[in-house]
Amino acid sequence: MLDLNSIRNDFPILNQGFIYLDSAASSLTPEQVIIKETEFYRFYRANIERGVHRWSQKASEEYEKAHELVSKFINASGSENIAMLRNTTEGINLVANSLDWKKEDKIVTTIIEHHSNFITWLRVCQKHGCKLNVVASTPEGIFDLNDFEKIIDDNTRLVAITGVSNVLGVITPLKDIIQIAHEHGTVVLVDGAQLVPHLKTDVKSLDVDYLSFSGHKMLGPTGSGGLYIADELLEQTEPLCIGGGTITNVNVDSYELATSPMKFEAGTPAIAQVIGLGEACNYLNKHGIDNVANWDHVLAKKLVEGLLEIDRVKVYGPLDPKQRVGLATFNIGDMNPHDVALTLDTEFNIGVRSGHHCALPLMKELFQLNEGNVRASTYLYNTKTEIDTLLMAVEKIANQ
Ligand SMILES: Cc1ncc(COP(=O)(O)O)c(C=O)c1O
Image 1 (cartoon, helix red, strand yellow):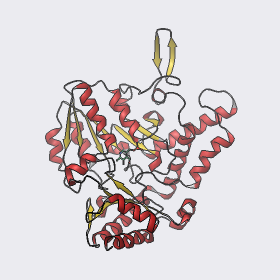
Image 2 (image 1 turned 30 degrees about the vertical axis):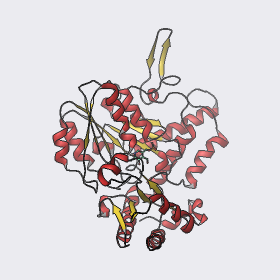
Image 3 (image 1 turned 90 degrees about the vertical axis):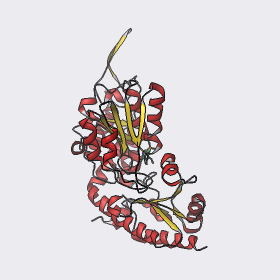
Image 4 (image 1 turned 90 degrees about the horizontal axis):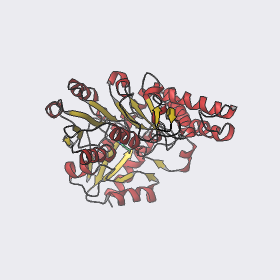
C-alpha cells in the first residue's frame, strides 16, 4: 500500500490548490529528486569523465551510480545496456537511424502508437524503400495476436510497439508479441514512455531488444531518459551522434568507437538530470512499483466507472481497469475537448490534457475524431478525492 500522506508531503507543488491530472504528459518531481539534482549544481558542478580533480571525480561517480540505478530499475544486466538520452523520442530515433535498412526489410507497428513510434518508421520506409505494416486493434486498443502471427515474417526486421497506449491507457500483450517476433528473428523495440513509470518492467523476462523511456514521466527531471539495448545488438547499433566521449582512439584518418554506453552518449550528457533520474528510481523503488501499479488500477477504476455514469460522456479504451494504467480519455457530447480542458482549469482548478495526444492515426482510424479528446492521467500522488472532484466537474460541464 502507498502512504499517500507521506508521498504528498514530498510534492509541495501540490499545495497550490491545483489538481494535477496530466502525469502522462510529464510527472511531478519529488523534493528528493530536486535536492539530488541541485546538489550537483551546488556542490560538485563539473564535467564528467574528463577531469582528475575532485569535483569531476564526484560528478562522474554520481553519474555512473545513477546510470546503474536506472539499469537496475528495468532489470538490465548493467549500465552498458542503457544509453542515457533525453527522452523516449530520442531513443526511438536512435534505433531508426542506426540500423542498416534494406529495401526488402519490413517494419511492423500498430495503429495505437504515439507519433514518436510511428512517423519515425514512416520516415525510415520513405528513405530506404522498406514497407511499413500497421496492425489494427479494436477501438479499446485490444489486439488479435493472430494479426501479428500473419504479418510478421522472416523479412520483418523490426516490430515497434508501445507498452501502454497514451490515449487508451491499454496495456499491450508485449510478451506474446515479442515471442512471435523472435520466432522470425525479428527485433522488437518497445516504446516504454507510459509503461516504465507505471508497471514493473523487466527487460530480461520480457526478452525485449530495445526499450525506450522518458525520465520526466517517472518523477525524474526533464531532459532525462534511456534506451535499453540488448547485449546482442550493442555492437551493430550505431550511435546517433559521435564526438567527445565516444571514442577510444582517434588518428588523422580513423577513429575507434568506445564500447557502450560511452559510444551512445556523445558530448557532455545531461549530468544533473541523469543524477536526478537515478534518485527518481530510488524513490519509486522505496514506494514499490507494484504498489504504484495497484494504485493506478484503483484510480483508473474510479475514474472510468465515474465517467461512464455521467450522461453524454463517452469514455475511450478498455472498461476493465486491470487492462489499463491510471489514464482515461473521454469526450462530453460534441463539446470541443480543448474547451472542456480549459473550463476544468479555469473554473475547477484541474489540469488535464486535450487534443490528439500525438496519436493522429489512432484518433482518425479508430474514432474519426479530428479534435481528439480529453485525457486525465494519474500517478502515485493522486487521491480518490481528486478523482471525485474531477467527476463532479465533468458532470457540471456536461449539464451546462
Ligand atoms: C506512448 C508515448 N510514446 C512516446 C512519447 C514521447 O515521449 P517524449 O516526449 O518524452 O519523448 C510519449 C509522450 O507522451 C508517449 O506517451
